[in-house]
Length: 105
Image (cartoon, rainbow, N blue to C red):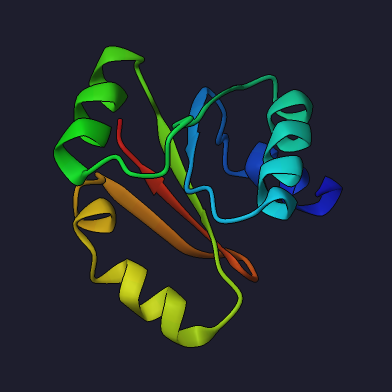
């Protein structure tokens, strides 16, 4: 997570984060990452938000970045074709192995 934080600092990625929550591992990393980059983590408590609800929350809470951790190449490709990735103004798909960052602003 310290290496990810260094990459974020180099690319000036900080602010308000949303996390795609699949398991505790990525959540734990994102909590530490938020601390190390002086950012705030906003995450859905429930896992059943649809795209429109998530985007409304992104606007409401002034979310700058959506973080998506993945383990397998097919997960990466599926996410890059998703509405979440397409909603961003910029997509960082190669910042760090296993992580995609979607910039909203």
